Length: 239
Image (tube, rainbow, N blue to C red; front, side, top):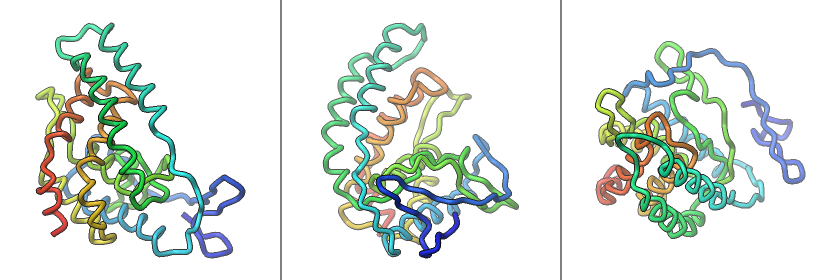
């Protein structure tokens, strides 16, 4: 990203945001991410968030309303569950459970420190050159709590779907690396740390609402994995 004449990366005009970016070289890894890439991703995300907190970034924007789009998406998943033919798919009652949970945890999450977030920081949106992160691309640029970026990145990098095992599992080593490297650039407040499990659950529901993914049960399984995360373990990653 390039700075404007006032030295800022974000230009605010009326209710719109503008950012000028430049070309950078690098290769898109898609599903070829490795653990060695994670520290760069975590640090870049933390630095991007920290910049917004410590610079003159002062956009007075409303938190994005995710509830309507997410609940509509979950209703679409309900219809898919009822109509698709698959050996394994989410139970139909899981939709109402996810809707109720999303409604319950959203208000508190939306009070946490916020700014422009990427909301899709998977390996497909990270460019690497000579083994190092060279650029992050394709920002969705929602104004939302920073920890939602952590949650989405965690789903991509540390809670992957394994096509050989047809299962989704948390990789605790990768998740810990992502959290620790993020904290090298931006320290989370205690309220954010305590809300981190809810953030992962929220993000998993959000991703599930956007589509079934590569397998009818893969994103639902990621949601179940996030429900099983240990809050004390997550807090220990920032000790």
